[in-house]
Length: 401
Image (cartoon, rainbow, N blue to C red):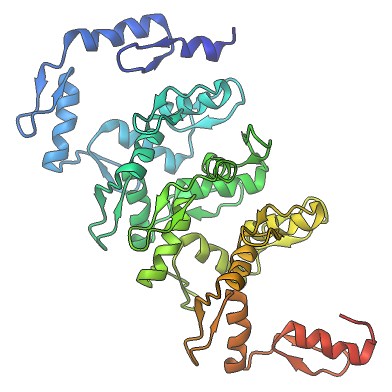
């Protein structure tokens, strides 16, 4: 039996917490045996240890006595300060003895080890779905309840998880505390740094047990698995439309609200999603960090690389429910479906003309802006649309486009 599986055998049968040794489990069980004799006189919540009660009371008082001597940020608990300091030092003292991956927090290492054991001890009592992390279960339950108890005190936006609220606030402050130790690039979100690091390492530790496809992040694997089950747990409370991913629902809601909170500081263009803004900025920088390992072609967006790779594999995973035609990208399928429904959701804000695809709207707008992207290298004549450009070239080459 391997060491990591041995560690996970010492699990508390009361609260399901895993301990690294039989002795630690025995000490831990005394917490349950003692009961919860320390009561909060404000909210009546009970604790088994006096120190836990002291820390809890800071929630009511708002007191944060533990201050970071590097950046001045304050915390209610000393353990939170210790963890925060790792963002400055880059220290990750908790290492996985199976794959060598390091973590700044012991709890993150414990959660990570479930990847190797495939153990999922946390079950949803509503739908029965299992999770390897307690936090993932808590987040999942908000899908059923719709509860979002964490509200931003600047813009009023609400979130189901406190960590997401904390990350959201960096939009207002501009703070980017997470630095890549390979290229020095900074990020507002820890998850963004993790995703960015995988660009350098190429690591994809999360594998789909249905089709074998690999992913750099667990959230991408979870989203991918829904393509097999066709489950769409995220519902729009305005029109009832359902989505497999929360990001899809968030993006969709902007159709109703028109909200675009993420602004490009170079050209002023606004976006619904932060990821869309990040991808957009590559237009200004010219950066193309995603490379095709078959032909070497580079792309500014990961989604563009994924679609491009299908030109090599011939894969068309998105079939039309109306006529059965398949497409290599979801966006192409969506535009195609509008041909069946007659829907034209993309309207020109200059002349009001509507289109079934965003691409067609973009092409159309060049009529108004007189933007000329394509220039004939034989006679120098400029064109706004690639199709017109290709037809013109036939005059010189006599080769059909």
